[in-house]
Image (cartoon, rainbow, N blue to C red; front, side, top):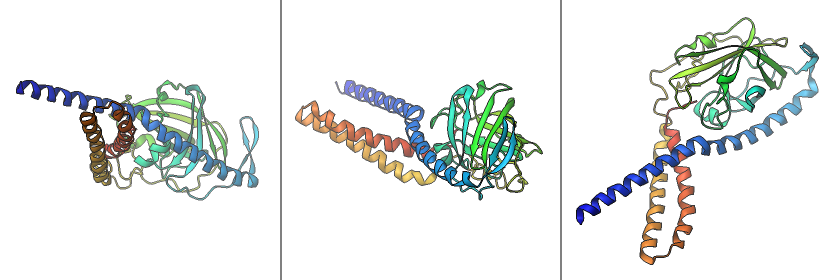
Length: 305
């Protein structure tokens, strides 16, 4: 009898752990999209407000569809701020782009590599995006082919890039982000899906007349690996970022403890008073705590675009 109880307890524990793992996978694939959608709404409001204040001082320029207008160069962007809206009609992508490719930046939107030119300017503009989590903006990036268009709306105007190449590289192959004399765009994401082993690179050339770069070209190519603490490539520390955000360790512990206590209290109350409706009362508290716990666990994990 005692052995049967032990075996039964182990079995129930394993089932519980398995369910938690499945819930965490579901959170990573779908729950993170809720956060990204909220961030996109906020970024959209900020970008549209900034855009409304710049269009009044625009200057004429020529484009493939005739004369257009271009606003003066904006001040250097601040990390986390929206700098553009990217549209890729073929794969149904419409997202606001933020400055920076850190873990926190890519949770909100595709990120512009610092120290590369802004969209529409001379040089190699580089943007990274998640492939499978946080709204998975670049999930279908592999479907792009030469001739497909990528549109970028910035505070300086609208720019159209035409895809001219696609390749898969190792994260250490930073040469794909080297600066160029012409105006082009490089999009980076993980390859294959659900893995960070390699990078999928899509390149495109600007179809419009380019603008002069607002800052000198960088002397070091940015890293294609968002695990690096310094993605500009100027100071790449060995193993940087592989352990995720260390400041999330204690929050993860306390939220995990609170989640376990919520489950335990609900279980004990159900056993003592034998009322099924007690599960209905405890379940909302448990799942809210579980969601926050999963968010902190994800902060501990390596950046994975």
